[in-house]
Image (tube, rainbow, N blue to C red; front, top):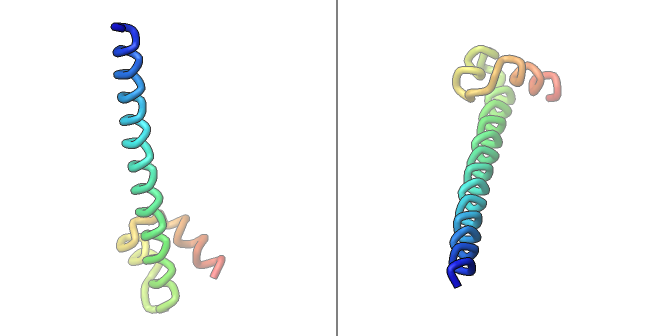
Amino acid sequence: MLMEARLLDERREGKAEGIAEGKAIGLAKGEAEHKLKVAKLMLAKGCYSLQEITELSGLSLADVEKLKEEA
């Protein structure tokens, strides 16, 4: 009985860790997508420097330059 209870506790802990990790991954993905969206909009406007886009979007200069080349 004690072994079963211990296994059940470990499963619950594992499930909780998996859920927390999934949420963290989802948030990070959403944040990255938002940064790209902001940078793309700013590039499309054409009135922002690459440095301004970097500062406001949170992307690296290399990422912004790559986006500009792709556009």
